[in-house]
Image (cartoon, rainbow, N blue to C red; front, side, top):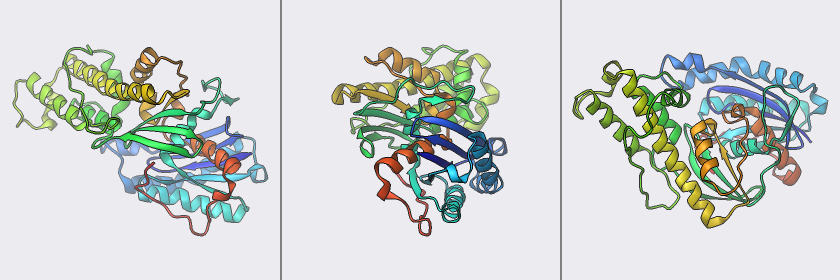
Length: 354
């Protein structure tokens, strides 16, 4: 089973070819990040225009990299939600058109579920990838963390899962972006906060961890506010001082300590909940998924605190990519082939959740 996966939910235009749900044959990503960086975040209209320009060349390159032509492709998988409406529309319309003109079955993929399935890739001849030695076993606990998602999900089997908890306000990746802006670090916030944190002291400030009514729910808005108040105090100002004025008043040591203390608290919140779920459900494997899954502090804390070995996928497969969509597409085509999408009717669902 060879599947072409197409992903266009945000600012990356991506396509990949995956074989049998575990062999990565190609992975091509065109990002418009540089176009959004000057605005401090993704601009939906710019992202959609970039997808229009990039999607056919990216798909063509993915097929070439995999040494495939269309007769080798057994199915097409595409992200249909959640994400930015204009961005999703480009990917879905392209996939629908290709499914019709090439005569291929089409499978609609949930973006977050796709992130989880990046962990099922174990083999590739592509250079620069470090993949797990084996696929996760069920029951499987998944921590999905990104700029839009912070979710704990228990998978009993393929397509049989339960959402245990999610964020009630900011996603953890969004909190990273907002803290980065407060202390004057460039977009995207996650990797830049982590880079700055490496220069600081994790214990310089004791930031709070939210206590939620939902056992496995998350909240990061209070942590974000605590960072703001701390930064204001560090420059001798009260709560009325605007956050936009903080970067020029904070020195580099203060920025590093704030970044390190924030990252430590945010990651501990994620790991605490993951351990709590592990103790209750006793899964056979634990995986992390989404852009924040590339965070080295998260990987370190989980490896130190989990009582079972944990294998991480390559950081390049944590951010948005077509490989995760193609992988899940392989399992859909093999295990649930009747769930094929109608290429004449498939629509986007921007607010799709698990």
